[in-house]
Length: 304
Image 1 (cartoon, rainbow, N blue to C red):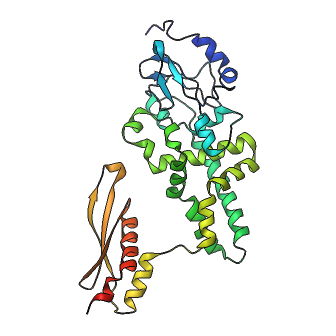
Image 2 (cartoon, rainbow, N blue to C red):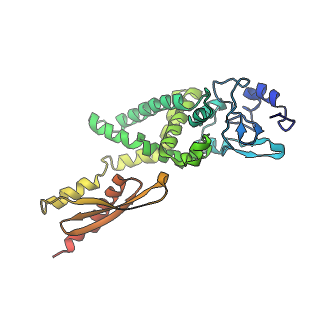
């Protein structure tokens, strides 16, 4: 395809991308221009703005089609405002938000967020471990490990990512986009870890620690109020077997929603009595909610 004047000063913009687009009012995460429909050229941290390959990835959420066919690049200030951190090197943020599906679909070497995810995971583990170590000086290693898993589990990290709308800014391959990858828990958790890794490289350990503790403030605060994680299934079984040796039985009685957002409904019964039902995004979560509801209603107490 012949590249026409629709691409305004394209070669010049590539040469100047590391400087021109890193200053206000742009503060871009990705420098991109439309070459033809569904083809953009992203420039990410560590890559060459001149030799970077072309990827058929469609229009990322961070962009919109502008006049003359060019891509109008959306500033990243909303994301930076949500996390109360402004990147000095915006290209680190670009790398943190670039999903591996881009490289897979293009079959060309490309920077993605996997290395930053690796770094961010270690940074998160250290920050949370140190904080819990200081908060609970009398806790054993095993209890501290359980507390840490509440904060840095994949599901917890995905929840933190959703709170700052991180999925809106992740750059995905078109296949991953079409299958709901922007809302996938693993994608969100990986991007969140990569984001922390990018902050660590951008400013060092102290700003990364401040960011993590600020974003995790509510979760860590709840641990102070209730350091022991509830196990409703264990509680229900212990209580019921103090009355009768028979254990409660769980079964999945319904499923709904698309494949990437399944909702399960579980039922818990004891002897011949249906105690409660509960819904969740996994069978385990649905069973736990059914047990919690049974503990709340205690319907067995009303039986003769």
